[in-house]
Amino acid sequence: MLLLAFLCGFIWDAQNTLGSPGGDPSIYTTPADQIRFGYSILLYFAMGFIMQGFQPLFRKGVWQLSAIVTGIATFAYLISEYLLINIVRGEFYFPARVFYQIWISAALTMICSPLLFLLLFKLAKLFDHTIRYDGLKKRYFRFNRNEEEETS
Image (cartoon, rainbow, N blue to C red; front, side, top):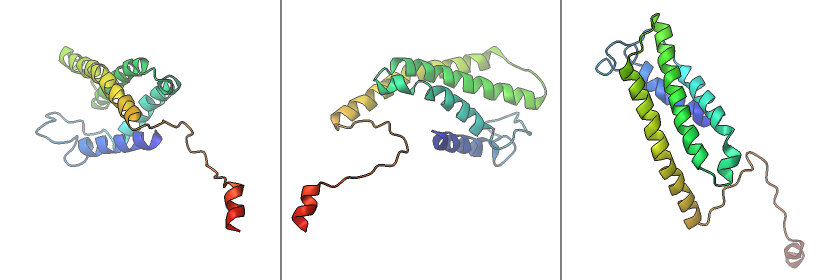
């Protein structure tokens, strides 16, 4: 999870902060000049940390709550990012249009995530895949003693 948070944050920052200040000037008409590379990695980590707390329910196949939390985490990430940009700019400008865009993005995430979760569970069942939750534990293999005796 930490690796994915780092990768997503790195890609997001690389897309929006490298090049001209604040990203592509044709898209960002008033870029924030002072935002540093790497802030998205921390925001992605925070949202991933929240989602990690619901992993036991997702393991049991209860994906409905994970879908709701996905929308909440998306909303929290976008609000945090916009507030951080406002802090860096030194002014607080929060038009209703921005709030609607953030809210609609979170709502679309909540609508689309159950479809994605359902698709993942169906594919796992179709391919007879069991999701393992061992993490990074080392696996030790045991050989059958009868096979060893037969080869001797």
